[in-house]
Length: 321
Length: 281
View 1 (cartoon, each protein chain N blue to C red):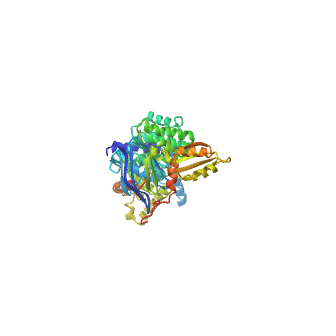
View 2 (view 1 turned 45 degrees about the horizontal axis):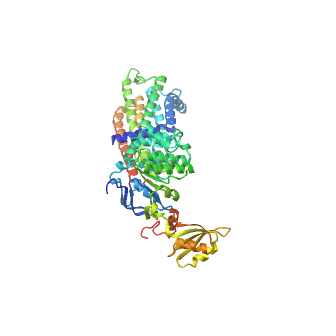
View 3 (view 1 turned 60 degrees about the vertical axis):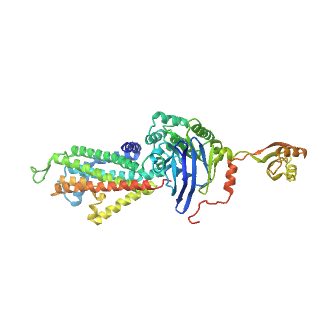
């Protein structure tokens, strides 16, 4: 695989803390220019994975390659091309936001005062750069952390929970920032987040971890594509609709999701041979008004709920267990 | 490597210069050095009162006052160096900036070296300022002349030029135990992620080394803690014309340099090793 195909390649990445495996046998490949979401419940191993990708934590087994080069052998070289915001943003509290960025810029190299100002403005802190970071709110620190992550114009940006502590306008700002990093600047972005909706609208690829193992790895569009075998219906008479649907041979399971005080209801119907048009016609003939009928759309939240509702298979696996 | 180290050194220098503690410490040190003649006078008066004698110290002169002033000011400098070095890495860990720095293209060993060198530069500058302040106040209060035997005033024990050289040599030699102190303090700072605990560990280590040196003079010769105040004690002894002190000065000062130099290298290397091998979580 050449430098140009994948920014991140991890093979059988594992990390054990004491007797507990935080990450186990994780294979990861992130294509250049992708916005990849890393999802998982608490303790799934997201932060440990990000730390291993940055060389902060040494893998117990496995290897990481960034831009085609081994992280262990070419750490300094590849980290020049990486920007990150890991967990809570951290700064020197006695220094101003601008001074913090200037110091980080000196360490990363190639950052001048104009670039610092541009980054501050990009995250909406253009007029607060002279304030000491000790006086920043959580949201301001988060935004300054994002500025620090993109300060040296890295090709690969890692963001760990970038939306934590942000108000709705700031969430929109960050969402736009992430998309523009990928679409306008061609950067690769890896975002770890609990905010599933944000991942759904921001990322084009998602990796779901559970108990330190990868359980889903795919394109968001494919994971949440409409399920034509399941229909969502809105009817004026829930009782009558349920009775009619359950009597049909080509209909599988029928779930009632919501019942209104006027008897109207939202239903989810699994098709087992019947056609949606056929059901629509049949319901109308049975005297039930159908106000909407559409293939069931699966969200990341549904996927996440399904996968995390299953009993833990390898979560917090103990040595020898 | 030199370029990266220079960059990191300048970054660390900027961070330290923004610390209020450093400036407060520097001002206190200089004030203490300037107040040297008054404090020496008070000490001599108290000693005379305790001994029931009427006069002061007949061996007291500008050079003994200078040496005493620098020794007193050095206490504060060592304290400042311990607090700042022992909290240097631990503070970064508690702020979370350790993670930020280690995720950048930085070799951890170089970062430690830059930290040690930056703190050493600033505390060395404070020490030099203290020597300068002590010299100025001793000159104003007593004058700095040839050292003569009070019983034989025509006999010059050490000329002004000799004494000036002793002070310069002692100042230079004092910088090495200071570096050792910072190296050991920085190592303690890599052991725990809480600045207060790290400072406690460093102070504890110094107390243990000092106690070990007290119990075993042989060990004391190879402990940098026992060398901290040696250079200006030797200057004081020379100015006081204790016999044989010139030979001691010529023998002890090089030992201060090499013993402390080894401790400085060991402390810094251990700190670098510890930080390089640990996971930054």
